[in-house]
Image (cartoon, one colour):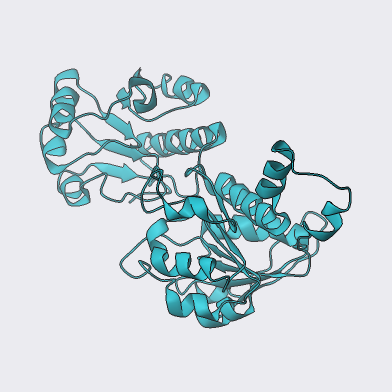
Length: 332
């Protein structure tokens, strides 16, 4: 077998793959470039690759048609998006797998970090000390009071791999967990989530408007689709409590940016933690940079080496299923 790996990949997983044949490893993060789809097809054919693994590259119809020996495509992403022409792959009997949940823990932990940063005003407090503005030991008792997560309600919009990971971790904070996800099967409603000490806090499934009205923290964990684009607009933000916080580590376009800016400027909600932005990177004149009730991070939800390890292991597991003639777990 011959494998072309264009995604960042863990050394241990590369070693596992080498048991089955030749591995050519050229991570796009190392090369700093994405391969032209036509050029990629020609290379796959000329060098006789059986399997291709990508993360940021694109495999169009012309790529697949140009590589008759290609039999397997692994995509190191939770969703395929526009990265692979699935119709072309289907016509040519090319197996396509992906890696759902590869970054669930990483994104969940950043979500909780943003919640804590908002609740205790961590970035602003840090900046205050760094700039020499801490003048009195009484400041911390008057001007810098925050809120506890314990006993508060958190509303999770989307209850896939990331939403579930967030719920499991927030159970340790003794939060009341609400969720809205119309695609969760009925049997998983009121799902008991195991805690380390053995108790079973419940996740209560509610309508979107009830979630927004009841939650002290609202966190987005749904994919961006035609259905979810602009899901949180002015009407939905008006349902939120004045003291509530919105956290978005999913996709920026799920929220109406202008409506959220207005709600924050007018203090109709307490604040927001945003890891995703309509324009990335934020320009110097971005209005987000002038708000004192937001915490901003530069789309780093999945930026851990652990995510690379997770998707590498998942892809090699799927290749081994394929080589044994078994159906891959995450076959698209």
